[in-house]
Amino acid sequence: MKIEETHLKGCFVITPKVFEDERGYFFESFNQHVFETDTGINVNFVQDNQSMSAKKVLRGLHFQTGEYAQAKLVQVIKGKVLDVCVDIRKKSPTFGQHFSIILDDKNRKQLYIPRGFAHGFVVLENNTIFSYKCDYFYNNKNEAGIIFNDKTLNIDWGISENELIISEKDKLLPTFENLFNLI
Ligand SMILES: Cc1cn([C@H]2C[C@H](O)[C@@H](COP(=O)(O)OP(=O)(O)O[C@H]3O[C@H](C)C(=O)[C@H](O)[C@H]3O)O2)c(=O)[nH]c1=O
Image 1 (cartoon, rainbow, N blue to C red):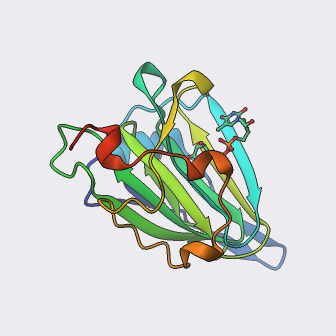
Image 2 (image 1 turned 60 degrees about the horizontal axis):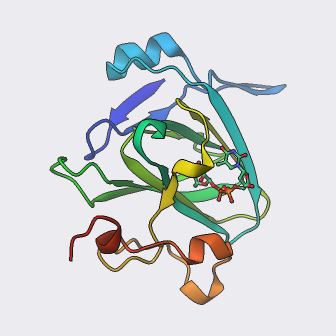
């Protein structure tokens, strides 16, 4: 398992060692000891989530506020996504910056996203199954988000806006500037 920190402090790309043979494949999709040793982060995941999406679906950008903030370890079980996380830690030198990565069932890569980040992904193959661990529980009263096409964040999702499939809820998310009263 290789664990590499991104330019956003506390955000890591994890590349598991995949063992393939005539039966198929095996890999450790999470190992607490390796994770803590390589990242220095003492994580305790309490909830696993899974979603399946059609191609061109965009879910996000989402986060939970306050004490319900969640760190996530995200991966693709089947299919392919462009995964994006945004540093929304106001005191961070990379506040407002994002990291993007292709996660799919070929590279088997995972992304560890610490608390204080917004997260989203756009689906690049039909019927993609997305699975992730969270270190705190869901609380709909603490759900928040940023509109996907925010001009300040300037994220390139790789698919034109009019083709994207986005929930009505996500279409109404605020801008980064309004959310953080930057104007
Ligand atoms: C997140 C969540 C949702 N739900 C319920 C609430 C809704 O009735 C239904 C669908 O929720 P939503 O449309 O918010 O699902 P996504 O758009 O996939 O949201 C997720 O997508 C982005 C990319 C994330 O990183 C977040 O973890 C999460 O917000 O599941 C639950 O019961 N528990 C949960 O933990």
